[in-house]
Length: 165
Image (cartoon, rainbow, N blue to C red; front, side, top):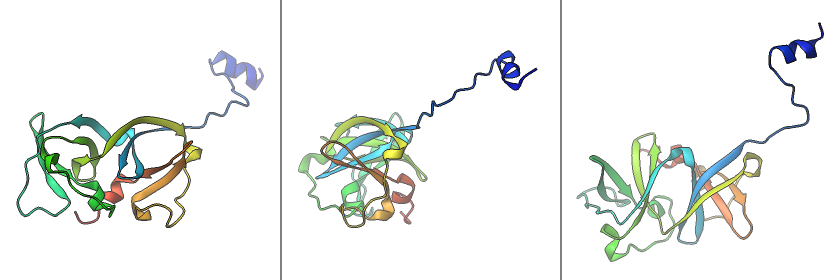
């Protein structure tokens, strides 16, 4: 019995010439002028206009905490954490856009300027960040993807939230 026939009997088909590159899906958002994203597997949810309670004596990048279905989640100013120039609006504690991400330290809410949405692209489109081309430290970046008119930065959530925070 030939090997090909044995595979057909076992219900296995040999696929020749069909190599499918793995797709990556991210949630993209704006932080000032930067188009930034997080892999969708690390996003718990996106929420808006949540009440945030300030926390006295917290690090300056911690805006406060919010109640997410009975769970207290810290909310941070990702722009300050990534050293992107910013100003905090007066109404940030009630009018906001928050992406809840799963980090090595648990769920954290990050304030963003605009939710762009879900973007899919082939894994091979992710390139290393050319040093000095974006305003975010390269240690926080998994890579960049050239979109039609924008450079999409893919954040490495583990490194963003592992710096002794």
